[in-house]
Image (cartoon, rainbow, N blue to C red; front, side, top):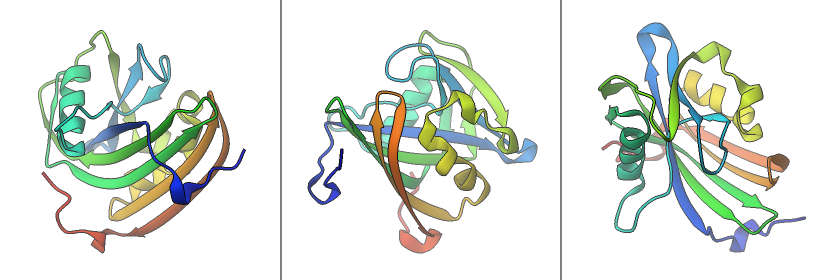
Length: 172
């Protein structure tokens, strides 16, 4: 299977948000309880609603999934996922260093504060091992990634990294 990325269009637009506690060198992850990736560990996030920006979606989804509100959300990446079943997902990736509220388990997710240097990659989507550690350790980067999947199995990947100077208005 070969994806023509030059003409690729998503069927779903979504977000991921990683809240970092720099003082303890940890990141807030979730164990998904339902939906795409149920049972896997990931960052909170979800589908963008009509009329909503990606950043607004990232904050809303984190509130819904964990009962916390991220502050000063900054975009650091974009992911394109092409699945053999026809699903094509564009995901905007955000970081935040502040939040209000205490992470709480919901019907959607179980919160997991995880050391940045000990990510549970074996329980995460296969693509995460190619970008998440670097993003969390080198926050002055922006990346794009293209991934092909057959269900949970990654068939191919390509990543591009740039410096933080790519855009000045990423923060909400």
